[in-house]
Amino acid sequence: MSLGAVRPWRTIERRPSRKIMVGSVPVGGDAPISVQTMTNTLTTDIPGTIAQVQAAADAGADIVRVSVPDEASSAALHEIVRESPVPIVADIHFHYKRAIEAAQAGAACLRINPGNIGDARRVAEVVQAAKDYGCSIRVGVNAGSLERHLLEKYGEPCPEAMTESALDHIRILQDHDFHEFKISVKASDVFLAAAAYQQIAEATDAPIHLGITEAGGLTTGTIKSAIGMGNLLWMGIGDTLRVSLSADPVEEVKVGFEILKALGLRHRGVNIISCPSCARQGFDVIKTVEALEQRLEHVKTPMSLSIIGCVVNGPGEALLTDVGFTGGGAGNGMVYLAGKQSHRMSNDQMIDHIVEQVEKKAEQIEADRAAEAQAKDSVAAE
Image (cartoon, rainbow, N blue to C red; front, side):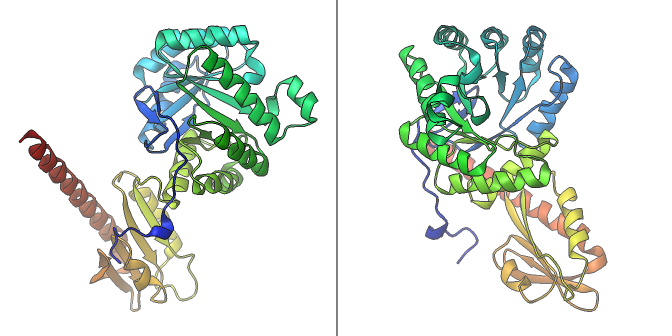
């Protein structure tokens, strides 16, 4: 089977949903699943916030969320939106007027939490502001901040309570003839979040924003998010996502893309396939992979690289990757290009050589894409 062959058993059928726009980014429908993160700077620190937004965008973030807790923050949002290379979502809690101010400041989307934004009248004012300034809205239900009457009705946060909260607030938006919205039903408990997302996915065709909220630190949060969101994505649920980590927002973006890449839902940068290493390794696999991850961060072209320490699995993995290196003996190993043996290379020169081969392959892929696009444009012009 060729590297680009379609494998039916790897196909994920995404849940049909309406498409909305978050600024220039389509969400839902046939649009790619977008990756989001959120700044953790003080929003009033305009240079610091812009720098963090830029870093997230450089890492591949499609959308960045910024907290707007007070009037000074909504005032700062004007400049942040103006300087941002990606659409900005304004995160609103407790005070509906911050949402109106954020819309006026140019936010592409307003994230409101039904449990703490206020009564239907206040939500209606937020909807009107979204209409007036061309914003979309995310109804963000959270297990930790459900409305009091739902907690009294169900006794505790549960999928049914979260779904009812979401549908109640969707109804308010629809009653005001507003349909540019997406929905999230987040919880820190993986089981609760997954069950709530499955219920809301069946109840509406709105685009769904995935997240396991307050997932934890880099390692714990990555695992919880991969399990929770990975299973939902595998079921076809999810149109945009944010990995919530107690870590640098750039790490959230990286983890988000890795989850999507593992499921074949997004392709960006070099996918390194490597072994955990053992006594059979012909070179230091762990240090080599660490070095290559850093050296290849600048490559955005989707491609695959296998780094395997010995010939047990090395040749087989290399058959399915664009570039590969398999450890051998006598201080050298075999370089594979396009799945085929190409030449031997010494271990001490291997890292530089692999970086060179990956960069060459990326240039070739981009040149082929450009030529294909040019050919299509020529046909369309005739």
